[in-house]
Amino acid sequence: MKLKFAFPLLLFVGLVAFLASGLGRDPHEVPSPLIGRLAPPFEVPQLAQADQNFSPESLRGKVWVLNVWASWCSSCREEHPVLLNFSKTNETPLIGLDYKDQRKDALNLLRHEGDPYVLSAFDASGRVGINYGVYGVPETYVIDQQGIIRYKHIGPLTAEAVQKKIIPLINSLNKS
Image 1 (cartoon, rainbow, N blue to C red):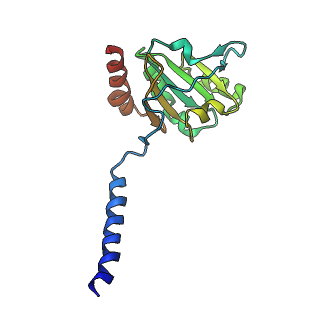
Image 2: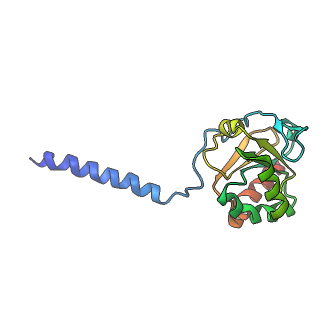
Image 3: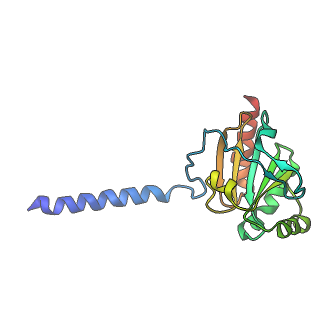
């Protein structure tokens, strides 16, 4: 008789403990299977200079940041001032990946709001984003000198995230 009530009670307590453990986690820090792995290679046209391509291979030997964004993305506009401030620090190259966008719309946004990027790659089809595991923009990656993804931030970057996570990581990677 007692076992009849004990099992559902234990199941309920276990479920509550499992769900409660998730409440303390930062939703911007979803584990990515790409962390610690070589960033997927790609070669796509640049946004501003469609006749020139960009490949991450050109940044081999440098720590750099890849920010996936789009002109149609309201969260990207929210993080834009943070990216502008970050780019002024000259901590590391900031590369944009314009994701599933219209070239003219993206160029207009950068012209009116300011362009924080060293350059933006143009991923019109979204294939590069898919290979990087992007499921919603904006997303930001820190990539080391060997081309290995060391950090992924989901959602709009905040000044706090840049100061407490991104810049210290970049500094640490540059020392190694």
